[in-house]
Image 1 (cartoon, rainbow, N blue to C red):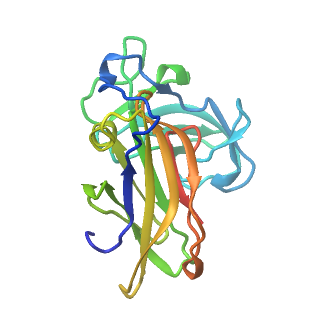
Image 2 (image 1 turned 45 degrees about the vertical axis):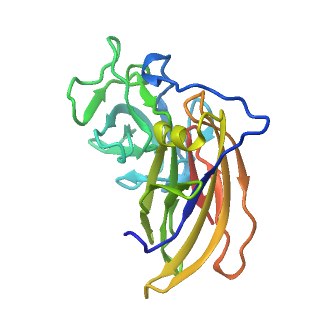
Length: 268
């Protein structure tokens, strides 16, 4: 996995005109919570047709579902949160007219169960379930992290992408691979970003990448997908995304925010 792809992410320090902030203990302040949609409607037999009935917004997180989506109305049944930080949380639904059919809509990797006296989350220290028809009883905590995703289509000649993070040429994380027709993701957490940004409130994370194909041939040239500005005093909330330039024959990969999560995704 290491040294296969060279997606470099460097965090730029902004000193001029940027406010300086102190370390934030997010465990001691008001939590940033998110909830599963109460009801989902899919107009076709694919995930792209599914929308939140209440907000009328399509579900932008394209991590997928288990099993595959079929046309219909989905009602919230449960939520699931794994103890592994890199396994996405799930919202689970039943569908009208189909007995025993439970669909798991996978969410972002930077979410986890938020347990309180009024929530329905079980007390297990490992994977947790919350069984309720009321989504307000199954809150999910948005961790102070930036999640980065990449899913590759089955017809692409490029088989792998990897992500490697640095801050001013200081390595933060090893690379990961997005294999063709699979989704891979990773997160930059607050402590990692705080060390790299050194007290700058608005931190710019620049994302670059290189590619290689089925034969293992590398494309060593780096390309810029864009940059993400995060607010270090507000749960690393994404403030802005700047798109990188086109880079010729290998195609163009852009960054897109995945609503309503604090996450970005590579898109073709």
